[in-house]
Length: 380
Image 1 (cartoon, one colour):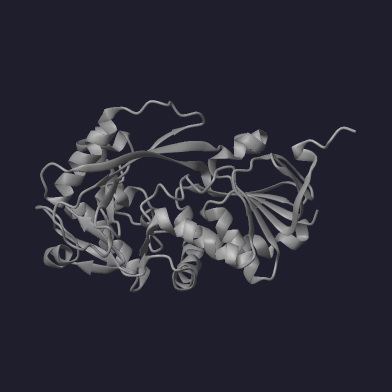
Image 2: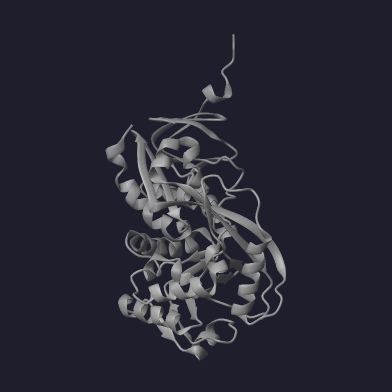
C-alpha cells in the first residue's frame, strides 16, 4: 500500500485559516478570536521576518487620510489594548514633525487647522524640548495620538498571545494551493470555513493575474540602526519636511505643492531616491533611521551604497550630529499599488488582503474587523 504524500495528509481545520503571520495576518487573527472563531495561521518561515519586523515601529495614525485614517484610529485602540494584554512594549509619545523651512511650517499650519486638535504647532524651543535637532529649525508640530512599538518584539508578542488564546500556528509551512474550503500546505491539508491570504507583496506568487490588475509592485527600503549621538530619551517619532511628501494626510494642504517643488529643485538626488527622513528610538536607546524607496515588480538584488550614505548624512544633519555609528543595516520590502488597500475575492471563501502603502503596522488592526464583517457573504 502506498502511503499518502505529505500534502495529502489531513493537518488541521478551522473556521478561519490565515496564510501569513505578519501584522496583517495577525490582525485578522486578533479580531477573529474576539468573535469566537477557531483560527489557524500558516507561515512559511519559523517566525515573522518580513516588513512587520523591518520598520520604524511607528503608529503614524494622525498623518493618514480617507479610509486609512479610519482604520488607523481604530488600530490605535487595538494597539493600546494589545500592549496591556499581550505585554508588548508601547510608547505613547506622539510624533514631532520638524520644520526646517518656512514652506514646511506652512504645511503644518494648514494641517493643524484642518485636524481640530490632532496636531499642535510648536516653536523652535518646543521642538528642541521634545527631540534632538540641529540648527535651522523654524518650528514644527506635535501629533499626540501617535505611538511607537518595538517591531522586533511586537508581532512575536502578539503571536504568543494568540497562541495562548487557542490560535494554532503552523510555522515553517508553505501554502502550496488555496481553493474554496481548503489550503494545501507543505505539511498537509487544512480545511477552512474561510481563508485570508495575508501574504503582503507576494500576492503575485499565488494570484498573478490579480496582482497584475491591481498594479502590485514591491517597494524596497533602506534602513539603519545607529547609536544615539546625544544619549537622551526621545519619546516621539521624529519626521522631517521630506516626510510631508509621503503621508496622505498632508496631500490636502495647498502649501505642499510649493514644498515639493522646492525639495525637488534643491535636493533632486534625495527626492529621486524617495527619501523619507525620519527616526524613532528603540527601547535600548539606539535610533532606527531611514528610509529610501524604490519600486519594481522584481527589484534588483543590489543596493547602491549611495542610499545608506544619503540616509546617514541627512540624519546627522537633522540631529545636529557628526558621524553616526552604524549598528545594523537592512532592506525592507513591502507591497505597493495605486490603491493603498488591496482586498479581493479570487474565489468563494478566499479573500486576499494586502496593505499596499507601507502602513500595515498603522492600519491593519483597524482594517481587519471590517474585512471580517463581510466574510459571511463569501462562504465557501
